[in-house]
Length: 91
Image 1: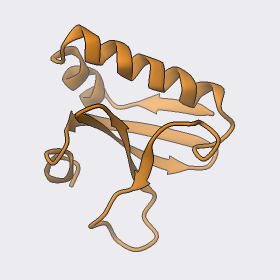
Image 2: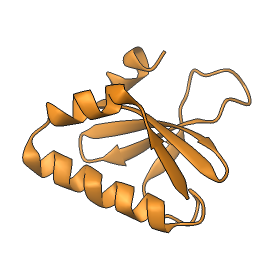
Image 3: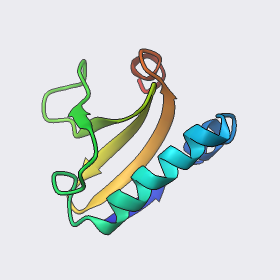
Image 4: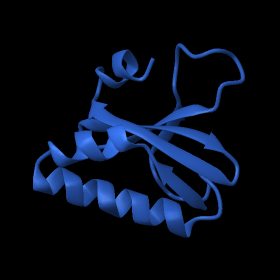
């Protein structure tokens, strides 16, 4: 799967502890190797509170969530934030 990263994602990721950055890197490696989100083996869910038909998902990495827009076969990684904050920041 092809992954595009938003500049905002890199900025927020650089502020996180090294252990969290490593976990995020492992998740992104799994996503890149997978042919689609469903077969990637990561903990993902449709993001609530979005317009019907919107393809926004959150991917769980410990206490953090990665906000992505998934349009098969491409994914745009938008943001990473603590659980609960991601819903406020991704709007």
